[in-house]
Length: 116
Length: 112
Image (cartoon, rainbow over all chains, first blue to last red; front, side, top):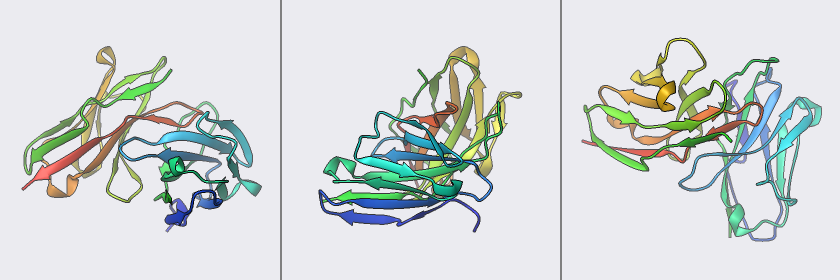
């Protein structure tokens, strides 16, 4: 399977714990995006990487959130001191971005986080 | 700012009936428009996209959508719905480079 993969698919944690999610994009894609989707809503942009550089972060991404993409391949999203409001589906997407063009994003299956 | 509105939270149609899901967008330039479908617990699957050219675009699973600039709309249609089409449908506008802006979604229920 050469699609976007995410691990784990489900995570249940207690409030205050730290969690880390992983996303493996399609191998030749240079852009990687993280989105958050809460129940009954569409996905909301969190942050994106161009290769290994994190170029933009949404105001939704509080200081407790950090994302990395070492070597421009897989990415991790860490949430520190989780809160119940962090419960959501976290989606990763990747695309091959050529300058001055727009390409569709390919989404992974998501990681569903439940904070108790 | 870019935004997407899907006026219908939930739609119920009978199997075999036609379907139209509404989408209105707000975007300053020529929009890149998408429709995605999401089944429970699953990721997003692209149904179709509009970048330029013919305003009537064909997608997978028998879906089509029409871009109407004058109405800022990109409605999704299917002439005959199947029970397997029951899912959540999201309209999105490409807001490069800041990812996509999604609507809140329309949940489709199909009656036998």
